Length: 175
Image (cartoon, rainbow, N blue to C red):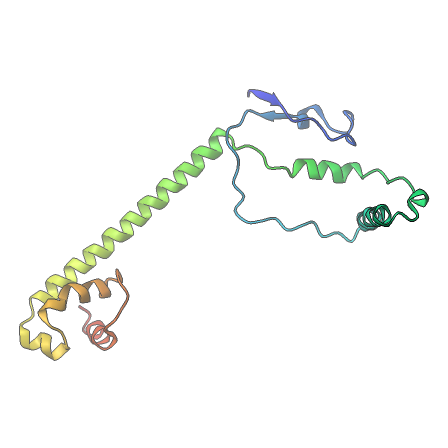
């Protein structure tokens, strides 16, 4: 497998803390689109909370000018946390991921076209069945011959139903 060098490691990660395999990434193309936004990490870890409060205290002290000299130096971040942040960056999509996404899109398009074709086939069959009825029977159903195409489309669920009473009676007849 052809590999490329990954981006530079953060300053708090040393070469010994990350294996050679983790620093090399496969050759990839494009970006992976995230479907759902990721929630921020929820942690009850005291180090995580302390570092957040410490950062806030530094900003507050710098803003008002009091007590800036008393603040201790910032504690170094945990190496595991830094590695997790580094690994969480968006990666580039490989050729197989792109091919799989294209195949999924093509399959979805084919399924949609098949569903539309089936609905149109049902509408044609319904229109043909209603077209064989005489005017008196259509009148008894509450229809006129000019409405047959619209009723067939509503029964096939190609359009929104607007003739509830008529459609219910036709469903009972199982046309």
